[in-house]
Image (cartoon, rainbow, N blue to C red; front, side, top):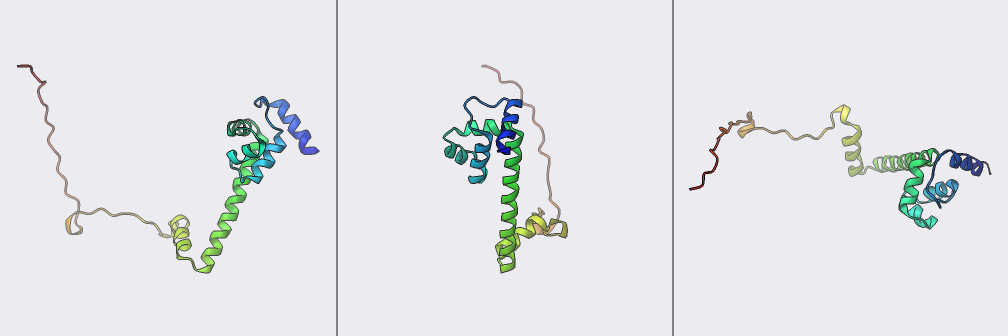
Length: 135
């Protein structure tokens, strides 16, 4: 009941597209679909454009989308940590590449010249050609 009242107050303050579903219904569909607009739109029987337009204009829906993404990131990081504790080398390597940079776990390519020496380069001379002439 309170959510519906807040949604009505918000709807009165902002201009949502005509024919939009109630904000509370959009939020529920977004949460059920993991924040994927097209899936939420399908659940609501509207276009993804309608969902996108509502989210862009509604502070409540923007906050809900941020919350959905944050929760998914937390879950995903937990899954990654579980794989690290299981000894998954792919998970360990990924973690070190992304979070271990400050400790020197950085991949970078070193470019050297022949035999590991410095690169040798020559500047090509600039050639100014005369304009083409018709014979």
